[in-house]
Image: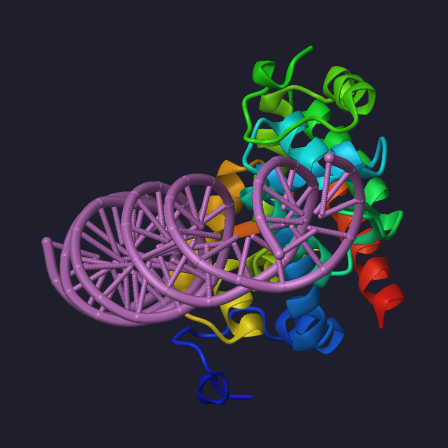
Length: 120
Length: 120
DNA sequence: ATTATATGTGAATAACTGTTCAACTGTCAA
DNA sequence: TTGACAGTTGAACAGTTATTCACATATAAT
């Protein structure tokens, strides 16, 4: 395999490792979904929302009060979380109660916390 | 507690829940660090880099080839990962070999993957 | 010393994202 | 029906970020 078969502007130093690693890499679609999932968690506001919902289901107004932020901002973020399948909601009269859709989120959170603690 | 004690523009509907949740929320610094950690994982390029490094330690050039991207781009991202304490490196002559710093990253990745699979 | 190669980095650009604002929908109560 | 309120949403703005480009640094080989 010559250097010209590679897309990038490098020489190949460790051909075997490169080829083996390429072979074992998940496909692009998986990485996109995975990155999108972590991107959702990678925002302070959304992280706080999820932490709050991990304790109780709550309406938009409650969450806004817990976080000390506007309803609009929270609603936008809840929309993002809902479209990503991370929270779901139920409507009761004028209010909309949000809750975690999935317990994977909780697990990921816990390990993230462990990481933070470990780095202190 | 009157509505005026709250920062946001809402009335409080479920006072008990709000107060209890505020009491149990981790502090702001923790959320910032947690969000920063997930933000790092929430990028396709960095996710691919970490997935590759989970298989082998690799030099910048190898990673660039595995991902089909420029050395410069990869080096920038590795700098970000290094400054976040997620990867570390060792220098051997002209080459710099990168590796995962911490096995928490691997765990988080696995659970993220599970989440993706679960949602299919 | 000079050259080639591996990597790092600052500046610039383009794309993305979170919050605010204003307007809107839908529901309840009078 | 009218008013009040919970929530949603689109547009705009400001801030952030990923990649590219050009150049700088460091090491090895000649």
